[in-house]
Image (cartoon, rainbow, N blue to C red; front, side, top):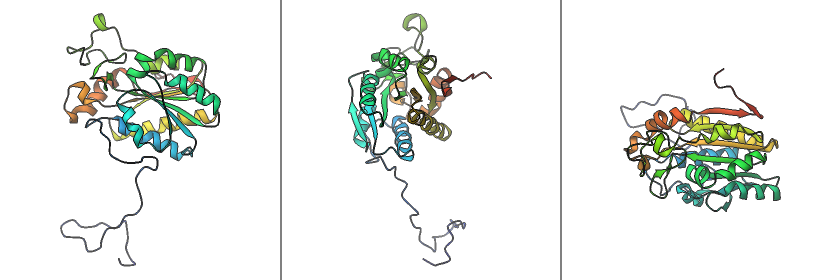
Length: 273
């Protein structure tokens, strides 16, 4: 390679390059053990996991972070995570995280749960954890279905959404209304930070990372309970082609579970202002 190599120069593509390319650096996430997973094509959960691990690494918590994992498709991702983990019973991750934080107050403690795990099986767990103002961060991967057990309706499934047991779409009279868990938790006094993001496009992924950074920083400051809800794609559970997952997420789930910050520094954010 010549000494006058300029990495910013324009390389023509109408002929083979005259100067060999070289790797400028490693872009592999530091806390991800491997890049392969066995979740369905088009699943948004690996995208969310990347942002979680990158945030932990960037904030300097690679050695002291402890994740408490719920039960769902994402549980299979634990083999990819190079941090300390605790496996919780279905829905009980916030209570386990409470115990871990009280025993290890200097560690960064977070939960990783799906909507079936958190909002169905363990709704009381996360509500009481927030109400007590426990200084932990709960992270929700919300796709509106019980993905691991076949794709049936959860408490966050939006009206009209097709699932295995709402083939014609969720109906309010028959199935009730979806629980907007982020809005519910934001209203509790013990909640210091609360936000909802999505990973359906590059802007959404960047916003997810930003909200995670703020939630973990809130925990570092000892402000109390922090919560980040991440809308993720599940084309298999939605009965749609893989490529349609991002748009479906944005137009269907995103229209009801609106993204944005809901509470910051213990103050509710007026989203209509």
